[in-house]
Each structure stands twice: as C-alpha cells, then as structure tokens.
Image (cartoon, rainbow, N blue to C red):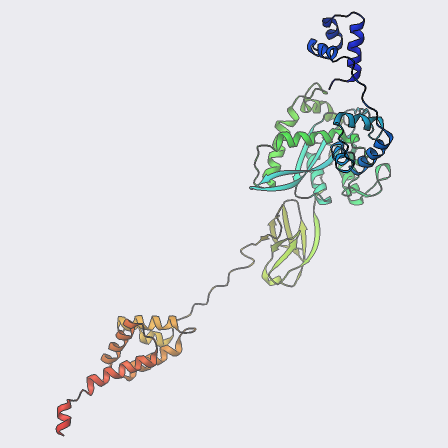
Length: 462
C-alpha cells in the first residue's frame, strides 16, 4: 500500500510540471506506479475513527493483548465491523494504543572490562528423542568470544560448573559479569539492589570477578550474549545429532572453537578469536588452584542397596543396607564415602530420571546351591534305560525334588520281580502313565500272568 503522503507528493510534482521520469527519480518510484497514482485521481481521505468505534477498538485491543489480527476478528464477531487491516493499524497508532519502538542505545566496552552470562532453553533431538536442554552462554563484551554448554537443568551447581569451564576456556575473566535477575544467582532484590547468593558470590570472588544484575525488563544491557543464542539455534543445532549430554557438549565446544569464534563480525572488523588476542592481556588471571565444584549430601542406604541422588539410584555394598553414607556429587561422577574411606565411585547419570547405576561387586548374584542327587535317584538309575526315563519324567511331574514318588518306585523295584516290574514300567512309559497306584496294578497283572497262569481244564478236573 502506497502511503497518502507519497501519493500527494506525486500529484504536487505533476502540478509543478515535472515529467514522469523526474518524479520517478525524485521519489524512487517506478514510472508505472507514478502513472497509476495519477490515473487514480485524488485519493479519498481515509475515514477517521469515530468516537463510538474508538471505544470498541480500545476495549478489543486491551482484551487481545495488543494482537491486531485478534482485534480485527473481535470487531467482526462482536460488532459486525469489518475494518481493513491497514486502516485498523492506522487507527491504533492515532489512538496511541501502541507505543512506537524507541531507539536502542549502544554500549561500548574496553578490553577486559566486562563479560556477560545468560541461559536459554533449546529444543533438540537426543538419542532419537526430542528434549529441552538449557543452553548456558558466556561472552567477553569486547572481543565477543563465545562459550556455550548444555545442561538438563540449570541450578547453582550447574552454574558453578559452567562458570569454571568458561573461565578455563577464556583463560581468565573480566572483573564484572553482567547477568539478569535469575534466582540461580540472585538471592533477593533486583537490578542495582540485587543481593547475590552467598555461595555464588564466594565462588565468583575465588575466580576473580563479581556479578552485576541489570535492571528489570532491560535485556539490552546484556545484548552481547542475547544475540548469540539465535545464532546457536540457527547454526549449531540444525542437522546435528547427539547421543547424550557429553556428546552434545563436546560438539558445542568444537563449534565455539572452530566456527563461532572464527566468523568475521562486521562490527569488529575481524573475528572474535583475533580480537581476543588484544583482550587477553587485560583479563584477570585465574588462581593457581581452581575451586572444585561438588555438593555433599547425607543418605541412608535403602533395603535394595542403593542411595538416591537427583531421582537416580547408585549402588553400594549390600553390607551397608540401613547405614548412613556421605555422597559427593561432582559434575561427572558420584563418590560415596563412609567414615573417611571411599566405598563406591559411579559415573554420574545426566539427563536421566529413575535410572540405576549398579556395580557388579556390590550386589553379587547368589549362586544356586548345588544339590546332590537323592539316594533314591541314584539307586533307580543305571539298571535299565526305560526305568531311567520313567524316573526322570516322574521327577518332573512331582512337587519339589519328587522324593516321595521316587521312594515308592524304589520300593516297587525291590518288592516285585525284575521282569514284570520293567515290563510294567515300559508299558506305563508308552502310555504316559505316572500314577504309581496304577503302575503297581500293571505290575501285579504282569506277576499274575507269569507265576499264576493255571490251566482252566486242569482246575475243572480237580
């Protein structure tokens, strides 16, 4: 849409006798556009916003929280007022409902004067699953040298680990680190009245710098670190795959070293890595001994032989069930101690919930008691293959070790003659008969047929 001011300028110049070519050159318009404006004639003035419409407009604007598209929908749905979008935005400007953006200021920093720190949540795919990770970043305000790392969450423990790694990466630090009013760093207050948490203040003082929180709703104060987050999301994360947080942070460190800090910046006239060479002599040197990052927690070993840290469980020797132990949580490992001696060291489970880390020496698998065969089993085996198979099948069908059934079978073997006994066993095995009472009936029939087979004719003569 061509503004009314430009349309009026075209008509005024034409009335002064200027050619189409000259009007096009002066107003930087195409000659076809100039012709169209002149052909349309005097444009009708845009209708002003009537008082009753303005009241409805202000009400809809407040309920739509400043969304002009939603304001347009509300006016049509509730008041049957179809208003063109361009007219609606002009009425909103005339009514002063939306403040025009104000010019942002500039901040200039000398070498080694200030560094800035912030965090931002980023979505990514890790091990084939979508996750949200907290990206922590720190930048030197003069050279714009960037360092980032990712964490599943960002507490004071992760903050201290990140600041220590950032100080190592920069090989020094600036005396001031500007932050927002996050509760991770700030214990109370905001802006100039912010009270830094004692443990964070002490940790920063050990490295040689102090925190300074900017005033509320003034993120431009740390614009050096705000802008790189969009660069990270647009350049580092796309088309990359990560196995876990360790792999993610390895790739992030390589990207900072090889890509982000070697890219030429127009505002610097060089790359951050080259500007860092100028800033490096002005940084605060790191202390000879860097402070360790760890947390100490007291735990009682549960009945399963584990201690819980951050929803995950780590094994200890089972002899300590119910005993109190001291857990040291380091960035990469969990160390469990009792009475001054280390009893377990586990790799820390990062980015997982309700997982277990078990050392084989802590919970050995109980060896199965080797049971020697029962004496009845030994006495039944070895005489005949059919008897061996029958005894084995009888044990499988009996409860426990089957001693009662084996004893009764052994008693039958000792009581009855071998021939009828084995013949009955083979017959029972053929038909799958494992009822010992019926087996004994078969044995008796075999015995009766072999030893008491009397001739019926002789019996009648007698």
